[in-house]
Length: 306
Length: 303
Image (tube, rainbow over all chains, first blue to last red; front, side, top):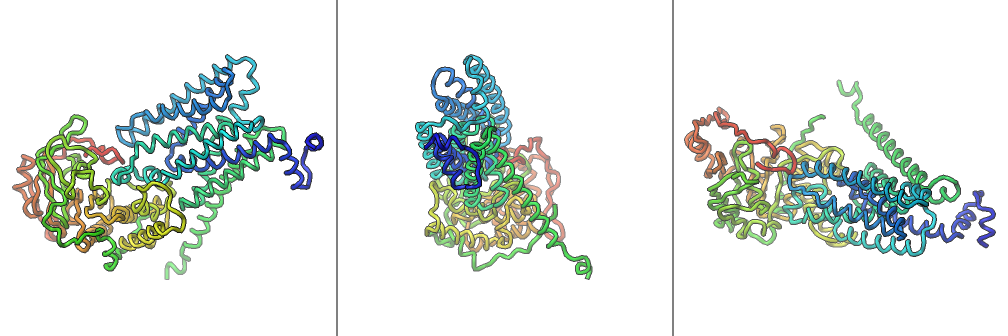
């Protein structure tokens, strides 16, 4: 049966048949499972990251996964462990930056340290890739993502980590929102602002490690930033905005996987293009809405002078 | 940016909604809400002030005055327990500072939200109600509904109903300040610590917000300790002022403290207090300290 399906792999006009054909391959089923898990996790963590304006830290945590994965492959371990080990180590490193000088001073010190960590991580990754001679084809997958060869074990690991991340977010999402928007008042209300920001970096590191395995370390933002940014353009209601973020993430991941299955080009490009289009559409829609609103509200010149 | 002004509509019926839970405000007048005895604070090796004695009785409206960089915000942070005293003793609502935070509403020096913050005004107020709680509110649960009702009451109390559903960053300074006062009142505090709530408001809005604070203080019996750089908008409502200068403090009624003699003694240099024909007071000759104005930036308060 699989042989028969493989023989006529290609798009037809029968959508149901096409989808059924795609899911006849276990690797595609695993790709969809992993993609779904990753999209939901990235949406939830990414929403807080965009709100906290820590996108630079998020990017660095993702890039830190590259030497991790390259090093793990070089040592003959699974890339998954490398991603998690290095992303989490980078999260602890960034969390160790003292912010005692106040919020503004802390942020400047943070971005400089974050940049330093990022440069070093990329350099290490490059070294590991060179040490492992027969690896050249894999660099693309590590940097720009791949949906091939996701095993049942990987899906299980991704799901377990995702459940842990979502449980922790559900537990401290509300104080984290308070601490992110208004740290001074949150501190006075007894919210442990510093501890929450360290905990959030660790969540962000775990999420970046998860997302890297689908989109590659350089395109993590596709699922971590763009859906959240799009949702926050469209609505100011926190719950709705969070739900939209997850929905957008799922849509672009599923669409990207499907198109990548039928095309010779890499998946990272498709997922990114779809989310970028969504973002543009949202911007245009809000801009058009504002324009209409302003035109409607401007008083008629004749009436204004009367 | 256009400055929007809206008239204050403080609904008097809604004042009951800020009554502290489980207290009878008029009875507790004799106990001090805030007490500092011979207190001193050191920040990064620098002595901010020392020998400070402050006593704020329950239900009083007290202003903390003084030039920039003299440690007015530090006094509020010490009362909250966010900064330790290096010398002396402090008691806040009958407990050591830091133990009474659930009963204190705090408005830090601002702090305005920038236009890109995509959160509504009512969400900011809601954070004051239950933002410190762990876990998620069940959708449609009784606790969530009660919090929603509380937010609506608070928004009505500060007269912000017309704009509370807009993104907070798009509102004017006065509108944001009202919503932040609503947030500070969310947990029915017995004590309000306000750090320059009238700063950066135009005179009309400053008068309206001052009237709102006075109403809350008088009708709900909430003690108010408020840092101000201009005493005039609140002069008629004040029970007492604390004047910080020259590393120390003088406290008493406004007519005792804001005089040429007292301020000259405090600054150890001739100071003149003039009263304009409309009752406004002007302090002339106060030396501006060379202090860096770091407190103007969010969160770096050293004042």
